[in-house]
Amino acid sequence: MTPQTVGVEHISALVEHIGALAPARLATTTAHAARSLLRSPLRSGLSCLGIIVGIGSVVAMLCIGDGARARVEAAILKLNGNVVLLYSVSNNAGRSPANTTTDGLNIQDYPALRSELPAGVRITPALRTFGLQAQANGRAISVSLSGVDSSAAHLLTQQILTGSWFGVREVKNAASVCVLSATTARRLFGDEHPIGKTIYLLSVPLSVVGVLSDQDVSATGTQAQEDLSVFLPYSSLLKRLGQPGQTTFLVEAPSPQALEEVRGRVLNILEAHRGRRGARFLASSVTQTVEAYTESTRTLTILLASIGGISIVVGGIGVMNTMFLTVKERTREIGVRLALGTRPEQVFWLFAFEAVLLSASGGMIGVTLGTATAEVITRANEWPMKVSLATIAVGCLCSVVAGVLFGASPARRAAHLAPITALRAE
Image (tube, rainbow, N blue to C red; front, side):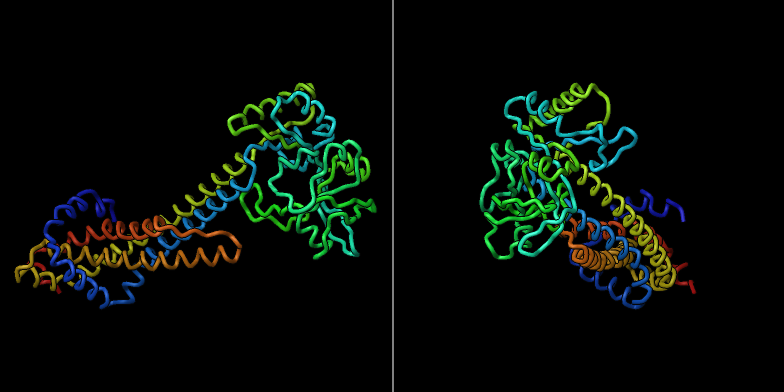
């Protein structure tokens, strides 16, 4: 099979024959094409199987991809896009922020950063420790502990539900106070009002002064795990618990336009403070993280949709082979039609409509199965799914185009048969 079978000349022939099909004959031609396909339903179904798989794959991937992008957009609305996350990784290899080294970020960097950053820029250290046991009312749960400054109340996206955030005085005095996430408060105290109650971390009592809303969307736009967070002054974490943990800094630019300038300024201050030795410092914004996630999702969607496109081509070749076989089987019928005065253009359209109808039927089935598959996958994994009219239109259009491209050559062969030769065919 050569590329000539679906070449430009066949598309040109298709355009030339368009005027031969009057609107009044459209329904009749479609009915004839449908009856011809129903003569061999099994063969017709197998012929469009490739189209069904291809269109279904494309539609499923587009639906899942659109849903993921919608989730990311929702995440952007919930996250503070002006915040820069500052962390350090080893010089030996690219590692996650958790793999900090002894020469990486530490609380001693905080005074230099706070004093040299311009006015209007908020900063807080975030000393995080995971897997500590919090106890209250005879209950114990594993929590993530964050030692932060009083300014963290403005940098976090969660809202205070009850009580208040700790202030400058509590940080200065290393007070035994803490703020809980809503889930942590509920798991420890049930329906009791938590403000003023005491929790114990490593046998150290901490008084609850506030409760935050849960953080339900992570920086990548995905569903976060159960939020079991405890916040306390970083000075209290160091002095009373002796748990420095992983050190990062949250820096808030005054506006999105100043974000890049603040990122560069923070890195310059650190490099000057450290003498450009030790750990490698990285600063990334929430927006950058979301953009990277969106780009990776888009790339994966395009890749998988391309694989579906290959299936469409394979399915189109199957439709073309079926139509060539149909033309061969119905050569005598074509000869009779031509001998009785049927114009070649009408024969062309009869077989072209069969190919388009066969491909379009596979496309509609593929759209249905693709949407259902995407629904099953997203529900099983608790992902979002978004079905747009554009996605359905793309699936249907691809199937129709495949029918036109791969059905033009067999239809053209049928239209150019000589009546005498066709009548003599066995």
